[in-house]
Length: 542
Image (cartoon, rainbow, N blue to C red):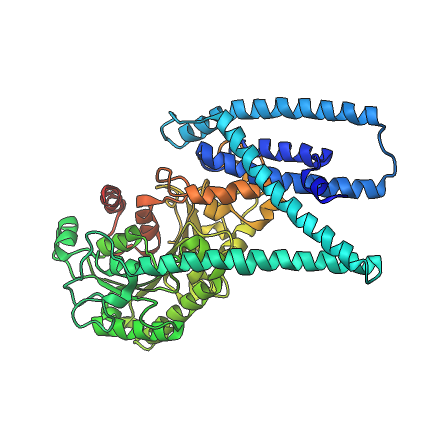
């Protein structure tokens, strides 16, 4: 087959059919709304995946079945397939506008959206053609190499070596050239961003926070998110205005990646900083997990400070410059190592205190921060035995304890709000009121939205319908959403980029609901439901 024919050959029957089917499936609703441009690119990627699957199945079928349709039969089959695919594409594009509006209405968002089906189709075709051209150029290269090798070695050897060489070359180029260059660029940009400071954040005057007077950690070494964390601690006057009583200076300790790159050295420095500030004499001490850039959810930190009127201490460390999605792919082990080192160091110092003088030892983390801290424990029992309470917000599907608890839920309880061992140790919540009820206070609380792609995305979506689509749908999940092999995996992956573009209570936004989470696991003496409501209102307005 000539070089030009390899590149310009007409589309295959099976590949074309599955490409259109996959693209149409990608137009159906997923967890979160999307823009028309996102939809066009997503449909193109989904279509090329479908084309690859269809082409592979067609090749497999031809090797197993010798019969071939006559030319007239093939022409009829193509006409029927093209007509059916065109009709399906037109119907899917027409309904996609309504599907997106319904999803936005379900989340209380403005339904007046810009949606251009013709441009979505044009983007899909353009990017699909580009991806197809690249794949055919790779195929042409492999044919040239195999043809050259066949001149010197037996045919089966040439084919095997040629295919392996091209596969390794593509993998090397994709990983060590494209992906590594992309990651290096993201890392460089993130490192530069780490040197900045959020608008309005200034070096604190309190001696109770890292980066302030007398701190063992310099203001410059905290990084952007560390400066945002320690520089935004609530003031005693703000706390007193909420409680009606004189308030203490809250303690916030943070060790940035620029201070020392070793997790053990960071943890040791954090403990010394806790000792300097008198954190072990406070009634409550919280170890906080951070996301990839070192970010700590300000609502999680503020809620605990207001709840304890400033008589609180918190500690966190930074383990990466990368944004969370990149850290999740590349630095997951670093996150686990940082969380384990920090918790073990803090708990070892905490355990040296007399039992009656120890503060309540709490944990909290959002997204990758939840994963970071879960990796410090062998299981739920270990966590409950060595910590006095934990609040995990929007946990990734890869969290080991979360996965075991969810898999072991009571039969009949939905996966988006599972009941495990009658809620004695762990409870799940989406909104205020979900944690109310009789029984002892839980040791662990998970806040998870039923439409959060961070919680529900997993590699298993490629080949298995998830329980959150197979069983009772959670609030905010479109009843028209369906599972499609490979397609839903890609849809929910893309949804992650829109996780924060929806109202609180949907996607990856939890807002003031952290007040209810802290109240469930760590409420101070005398705290009541009215106090939680006031705190929730305060957090909502900030």
